[in-house]
Length: 132
Image (cartoon, rainbow, N blue to C red):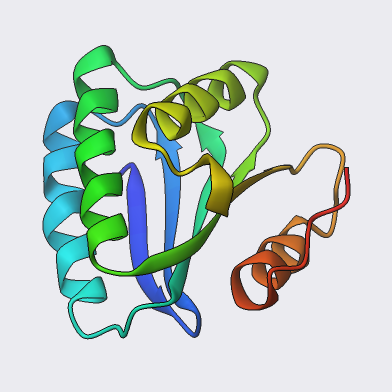
């Protein structure tokens, strides 16, 4: 079973993690991401579901930064990251800060917001700030 799922979404792309992505997993993701975003016009968004994710290794985190850069260059406008772990929240915020996407990313705590998917979609599609 894969530790990630990537699929097209009406707003752009959805990524869900389920475990501890190895550098090999992250490399495999890159091809999937590029296929999905290639036909998208600038202004698309991404929902990243990290509720069931374990922390990234340093090597995987560096590779994730490259994926974020690819998405920025391809016209990503907004991103919503859904988290349920304090450790993953810290790591996701650090990676986001280091790639300069903090202005157009929002972090949503699924543990305190049962409507996390609606909040994420509202941010991605309309720029509606999530509660909290």
